[in-house]
Length: 401
Length: 70
Figure 1 (cartoon, each protein chain N blue to C red):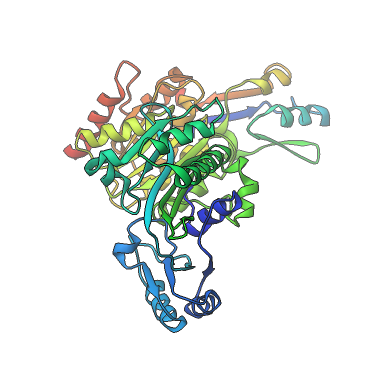
Figure 2: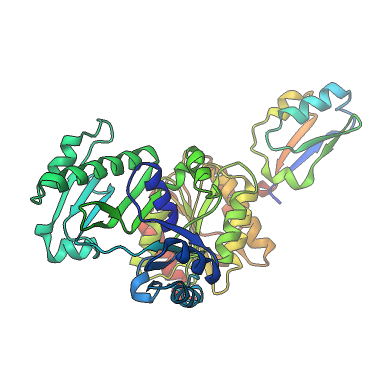
């Protein structure tokens, strides 16, 4: 779950991290009023769940309340990567003498959290890493052992910071790591962290992502930040297809039919099981296939859930065939999946033998499932056919159509 | 479409037995209507083939028919 900037800053503020004076507005008149309260130049920032706001014109500066109103009016009508702003953040404009980058995220390869620090804030950290690697320090941290001030000081000082700057940056980094761990974040990033002429540090912009699976145990924080726990946040608003996918998942508590994501291809995917979805989606692409969707079905869903998900995917415009594929399953029943998928195909007026490019779900109750698939003439394979091979067969069938 | 639950007429009588069948089915295939046993048609395909209903009822009273095995 990605936080809007104003929510991320509220989180930082709750934990004693310095953020600029500011308020959230919904209209240009509110922006004018807030600008008047701040007394002085302000920055008006579009609240969208996307980067690139400055380049897109979603961040503007204003010296007077009337200028702020005009700027707000422009930003409110400005789409950034397909998103209109949810609100505007109005903050005091701050002059800096130096800018830093501080981030905590996960290193998927090392399978542990990583801290990134740079004395070149305000630009993409990837650009710093590629062009000025000597200005980027990084260190992994344990998920188990406590994080110490010493470790924070070590990484800050590795770029030559000393004295007051070292002490202040260390304190901020320790707090950032603390909230990263406490709130199950996958990203806590301050960029830039501005240094004022007084020596004070202020978080001028920040990004916070929370692990989706943790929202149920972080309800207190979400409530404090007025974020509905059921709200889905991603880099763009959910499409109607994706919203209907969420509805399918909520029809009963059995199993999961989640993370339905819309793409514009012609192969409908009913996929899942133990990381199988990502592997299968990649395999489809690697073999030159065009997926119509992504999804994760598993956890022994009901027939109805498999049925509704299949129906949703079948009815997506452009879907030529569906591929039903999973890892070897122990907790999802093959026969239950077969019933749900075939029932949907038949109810939608299709021949399962034609519409299902391949059915590759080996595992629990597979002999019963294979009887059903045989009865309806569906091309199915067992575990002797790899996920990759199954994906290739599906792609070839759709191409041959 | 896949599963048909059949009750042999006259074999399920008494409120306790009806309640027991309603209770044991994990996917709500049975319901009670004023002491009578009803089969919820739309739930039949959810049958998990657990046989709990067969075990709860007198021998031969409940039959689970796999329509894909005809």
